[in-house]
Image (cartoon, rainbow, N blue to C red; front, side, top):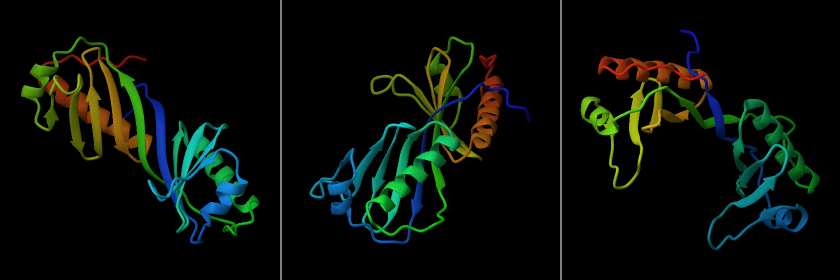
Length: 187
């Protein structure tokens, strides 16, 4: 299956576990662009400018990174985050692995869509225009959720890699064509 849809990754959420305790107060005292309000949330927020991203750092050593738009940016951001923790005098491992939890990407098809008709015709879809202007559609294999708008814009979420998004879009396209909608991906 070729990649027929043009995808633009908007956000990658990933995590790592350092296996070390992290004293958040020390990070707050020594690292710029950090904030921590333990009475509201247990994690420290650390923002970096390049690549633009944010990390939630937890005392048990878990780090959640969000905001990057490519796997290369994600790797750079995680290296900077862990490096900065080390620069603060906190022991960090030499090697760590990063696991992608969610990729959010956008695509578009050339169409003017009647979302009410699509919601009636397709199983696994939800459309409540009083609450939200998009139709929610779920594909189970691979497990991806889509937001479809009347303009043809598609927001894809839940996948752990771009290949899964492409595969799920192909499945979604087949379901739309199965109810008589001509799906032409915009490039």
